[in-house]
Length: 198
Image (tube, rainbow, N blue to C red; front, side, top):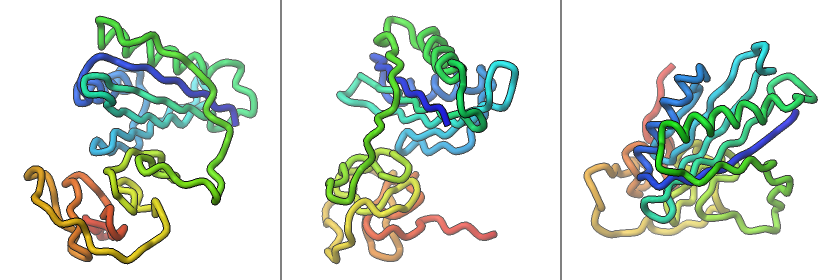
């Protein structure tokens, strides 16, 4: 399946850029399938149309340093083996629209192919990204707060003690680790924080 990626930086706070990305997706009629604002992860899709073979679009929004927010987009075709540039055109449309919504110059988006190298078992995993869903994680997390996947080999240890940083923190009922209120899974033990009943 054809894949393309792109990155752009905007001189705005995280919340402003995330809101504009969601607005752009709606205005472009891309369907948001999953969104986790706590980690800035959005999964969207584009339906099969004369302009697109249908695409899955993963978007990561993060702020680094403060006041500079990055939008990283990875698009893969749902059906086509060759896309004849349609993925690339859709990324260009998204970044052009974001530049209109966020004036005063985000850096011009640079569309690049996604990295081809995969993480081997010998390589240490980055402490800030989940290898399954690529969402950013709080420092010291052992499990992804978005998908619940393990970030490192399990080691038994006490959860870090300390004052809560804000009222938007909740404790895991299983292990007591403090997690952001928006987290779906505990960063300490991987337990679902908000069980869903079917």
